[in-house]
Image (tube, rainbow, N blue to C red; front, top):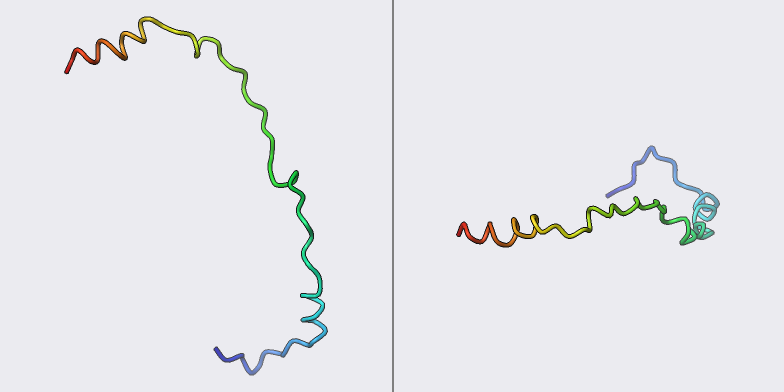
Length: 63
């Protein structure tokens, strides 16, 4: 691709100023956001005989 004839050529000082230093270092602590978790629901982890039967016995007998 040829450069446009009407575009001004960048000066050596402008190019050197842009690329003369490295970008700022990003700290690892700045790369994530901590979100507090919700409290565990005790009824969610409880064992239910009725649910166990519905999942394992009743559905298997329909086959």
